[in-house]
Image 1: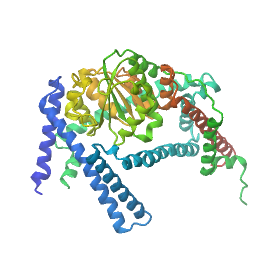
Image 2: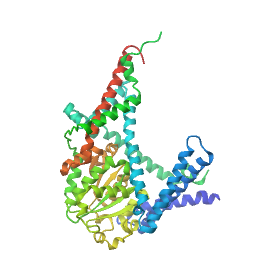
Image 3: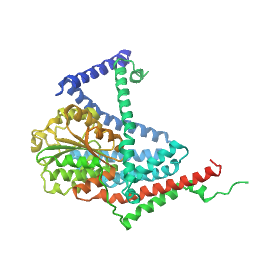
Image 4: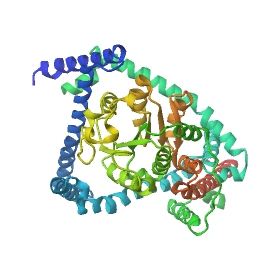
Amino acid sequence: MSTLLKREVVYLITGVVAVTMFIDFFFFPKGWDVASTLQTWAMIIGNIALGLGAVRLLLFYGKQVQKRTVGVWHYSVWLIVYFFICLITGLAGYITLGHQDKNPIYYWNFTNVYTPLGQALYAMTGFYIFSAAYRAFRARNIDAALLLIAGCFTLLTNAPIGEVIWVQIPVIGRWFLDIGQVPGMRTFMIAGAFGLLAYGFRALLGKEKGFYAEVGGQ
Amino acid sequence: MTKQETILDKMQKIDRRILYWVLFIGLMIPFVSPLGLPVAVTPSTVDLYKELTKVKTGEVIIINLAFGVSAWSECLPATVASTKLLFKQGAKIIFLGVHYDVDLTWAKIKDQVPAFKTLTYGKNYVYLGFYTGGEATVARLATSIRTVFPTDADKKSLDEIEMMKNVNVAKDIKLVLSSDTGDWCDYYIRQWRVPYGTPVGEIGIAMLGSSYMPHYQAGILFGMTVGVRGGAELEKLIGELGEATVTMDSINISHVMAIVAIGLANLGYAATVKRGGK
């Protein structure tokens, strides 16, 4: 691919899109058709990315199977098999009944396999957090001790039992939640926004080499 | 000669499997004997509730389902409570979602809100289904819902749906309620709240409480519920106790057990340091 396509066209597209969105935001309060069209394209690209993601997933796990990666490949086979079960049953439901969920096999899979697994995974994190808190929360110095105290008050504030233990616990805990942490979070947000702004300008001016180099494959 | 391990040393090194079992058994307690402790309502939930009670008959609301089935325990109770309240107010609700499993969440909401049995699809509520494309799509929704969703989830044209006839842009929507595990509420703040002034409320997992607190305090979010607790608070406010209220028992037990475990570990650690160990 020529350098023109690799870099210059990418510069141009990024620049045109960025300038269009700026103009739309600052000068067209009711929306500008050109910007709206670009947003629609972004939406379409987002949908195409879903399909691309599926292809990449199959390629990645297909390679794991091909290489017989120790301890992994049989899970990859299972993933690929399940991928096709969902795809075929879903498509069959869509084509014959108008919606994938109307295929009972597809729906059964989602409600009886996917849903319990998803919820179990989420619930298991509670056990990990419990164990991690036990191991990590040690008052090794004054900073760690302060973090520990704040953490304990926050935990007990979130649980109604905190108020039963001592009526002032939620008062102190709410101070940490509503006042203590907010300046820090605001600082993160504002600093992040400025950083993003700077990054946007650098990308727009072609100075953000990482972004363009990656696109250009250099 | 090696020092003999004391009970204080052992308190710092409890095997994780023992911790898991203790927590597991502890979480069983509410099933045998429910605690039923009262839940105090936080101001952010009260504000969300108050704003929802201001909705008038016929006004159109968007409920954005930005959580998957794994986060049902945290996001679903408050979403269900809000839906019940909004239907009581006579609101018309547009449901849409960003997770590929949103159809399951939609089915669950329909199952948990009795009002769906008496209300009419297309007149009182509509389900548009799944959408992707991130912030660009949220921005496009504000200028043309029909571009993103020419039809509802059952392929019926929006023009044929009664409640959607005069609804297409942000100004046609009274407010947006985003139920999140991630940053979709940010998109609605940036693409709906800031340019068009559409009020945005948040139903988030516990972790998002600190992230969105600055937005709430600045008045950008009209209210928010945080995690299961937020759901329990909203259930209390609407006067219909549900799943979140039941789950609060588990929250009580697990949080107290975490505090006890942390306390034991620190007691052991303090004793070790006092003896000159590390």
